[in-house]
Length: 491
Image (tube, rainbow, N blue to C red):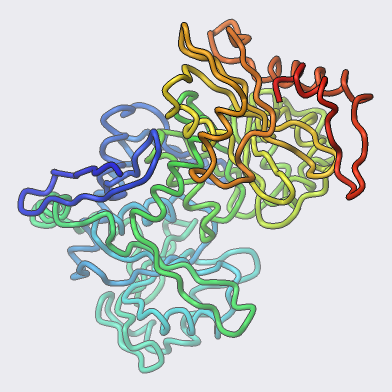
């Protein structure tokens, strides 16, 4: 076990232990991580909202976040208070996400499609003391819907609201697309950003050392398939590390990425793998439109030179079926994330070819088990004889894919496949242990010096195909290698 300490707190030292891994968990808060990223990339774009024609560098974004956080403190909110956010993908959503984290408040994600009864349930269930919301989205008039619950709103003073149905709610903040429009009883988003003074800014600095990574920071509601939606409470540590390790798989650490994010921010897909990724890796979050529009997605990819694309299978299908798909330049794409439901194989093939995303196939799916090559590689690196390793998936007639490890040993070292497999037993799950182990003197490299994975895959696939005639079926339906073939492939 390894013990890691975070000594940033003057009075108390926090530590945690973790098992075998070449990377430790992030032990900072969201606010601390954002400030670290701003120091590294102050002039890099943090977000781009294409529909609203709004964008900001990390330095500008930090200023917006600090202003809103100070405004929330000026309105009397304290650590642990719940602040709801109700709206589509917009600049104010992202600023609120980071500002509440800096102020020690708990952000409550409210589905933009909620109807009045669902909104009331969510506000009351978690005791929201404030709600920051758009004025409308699609056919819904949010202000009108809220006044159906809180009849006193139009006559109230911002911050002094009281209603028996949602007794905790004190403040309503409007993030209207029309910045000139006013709403009785509410405060505008811009007003809230402007009221924080020197005292609140000082408090923000103090909170940097008071907040802990394990503090609750976010409540997300389940879909409520077995009754009313249930609120799941998440911490800085939860969601920061979620973003961190997914970003590692997508190679955001080594390659600056502009992420196209058409998925909704109220869901963990958008707010964690999307907007929060900017704080962990300095990526740029590109929001094509407030609501999903396949044409806007393609336009954003082309104009903003996006490298990564997120979406559900349905979203990807809509993009692939767009009548003008071939007219758009999507050559900047290299990877992405598809989640939410199973994806038909043919759709995935089209994503890889038509959307120029070869890296989406890094995940190995063996008999229904998801295996991340990076995880297996990190473990194999702990073997004293191994200098470098690359793990890939290879076709298997029964399991779909099998795990294959290409290993480069330290100079003068020798090893056998059996030795490597024995090293893995009891340390990683059996299905993650490489079935195929290939020793190699040098890896094929790209012109920039990176390992050329397609070259490795082509090599092992070719060897397996060349020996396809040496396969025979056992009595239980499995495919078994002949001994000669095993020797030739180092199995």
